[in-house]
Amino acid sequence: MRILVLTKRQYMNKDLIDDKYGRFREIPLSLGQMGHKVRGLCLSYARRKERWIQDGPVFWKSINATPIKIPGLFRFILEAGILAKRSDVIWACSDSFYGIIGYMLSLKYHVPLVFDLYDNFEYYLMAKLPVIKQLYRLVLKRSDAVTCVSRPLARLVSSYGRKVRVAVLENAVREDLFKPMDKASCRDVMGLPQHALLVGTAGALVSSRGVQIIFDAFDKLKAELPDLQLALAGPRDVQIPHNSKIHDLGILPLEKVPLLFNALDVAIICNRENDFGRYCFPQKAREIMSCNTPLIAARVGSMAELFADHPEWHFAPDDAADLARVLENRIMNQRTNYQEVFSWSDAAAELETIFLETCKA
Image (cartoon, rainbow, N blue to C red; front, side, top):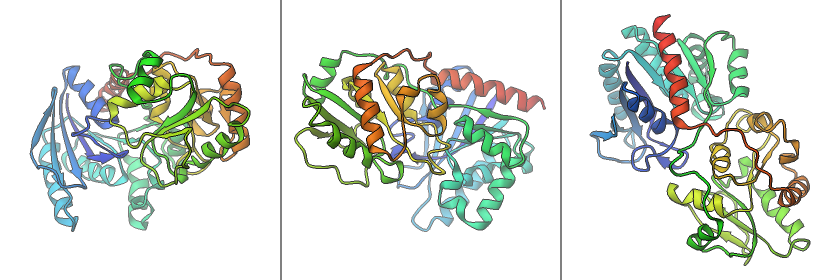
């Protein structure tokens, strides 16, 4: 198949092309490796060279949005139209805006559209604008198929009136990076104490995900567990406490994130009971599992479902006392009988089936 991918270039504090990162890079790459002809068009909100870039079998073209935005958006739409009429299917990703563009091109050139939701886009600023929100809901109903990052999100889409071709396509892992490694070696490389009881996380350290309770739970446990130390990495909007037992590793390059996960005795995934937390699928969950590191997660949305058979791995969101209780128990019981980890090639195979069914319809 000739597949066109429409997406933004920067997401999750990474750059799709420069960092070779994430869902919108890895799934098209796997599809290309399966023999499909994949072209990607991405809109960059930071100034980048505008040219075709080859990533394995996939060719990407980047267009700058520019500070004024409108000229860049217009050029993006024109280029997307040129590529769409030479394509068999469009996969529109990363925000409501790209789904709307994909739908317009789908109608004009009679090319099937599969709209991918890697988050609840209504939580984003753009989809809260009245006209955009209405168009977004329309595209959800009329796309040829919709792929959703989590089961709760798929149920939300169905509640809007869409009853067919709503598929769950969860986040996955790069198996070449995220795998079990020697804990002592990882701690040595990351400059972390060898003999500490080390817990922590990597990812967005932001208040909207309730990360403050990590510090509160740490305060509750540090007297009872004198060897307990905390290691954190990622972009943040919260103040990291100054404490000799709290290790702030800043923002790590992707290749160092698995070193941190392997260095931990227990990894923590925070989220809140809000329109983001209920519908997301934290990519770090699969990455931690792939490293075979014990984890605990807030009992919200997809994490509540993923670990339904292990309620002892859940803590109540925004409840530092419950996090402290669950963390202490998890330190004592570090069993990791995880299910088989879902890889990006697995995700691409599922999406290929969706494309083929959509093109036949």
